[in-house]
Length: 159
Image 1: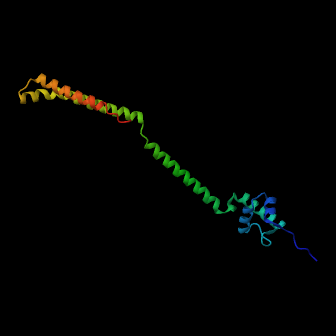
Image 2: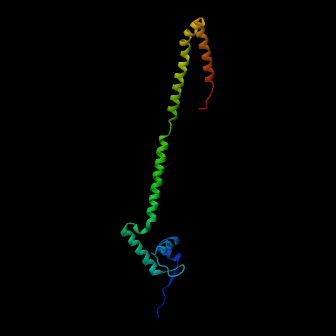
Image 3: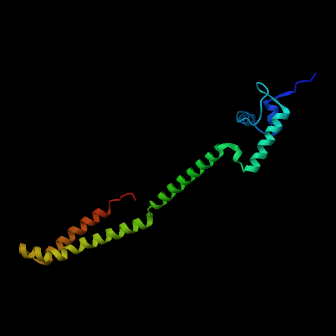
């Protein structure tokens, strides 16, 4: 009379094979570790199935671990590439604050200088048309523009 092989719960098999319970279940679903009955595993077939799995995996270079690992690796690589492209785009769109402020100041200074030079150019023409003293007109236009620029300089833009 032969005696039936002893069976063990999934937790025992997992501990013996140094796996998690979920991993033992996955390997069972893949047909690598045979299940004797509900939640019970025969010791020898479970160990032999796992050893064959590891041997095949070692010989085939992890190919026996399903395509899930390869898919995950491709997904990680794709996400990394997206992050790199995003970072590159963001770096290219950065504006150097110091250089920008310097350029704005240069443009404002050039504009201010042009406005201050205007009375000297316009006064002779206007004085001739109006029949007034050129120097008095120049002084009046210059004083008005300087007052205006002083007023504008007091506005703070919060930069």
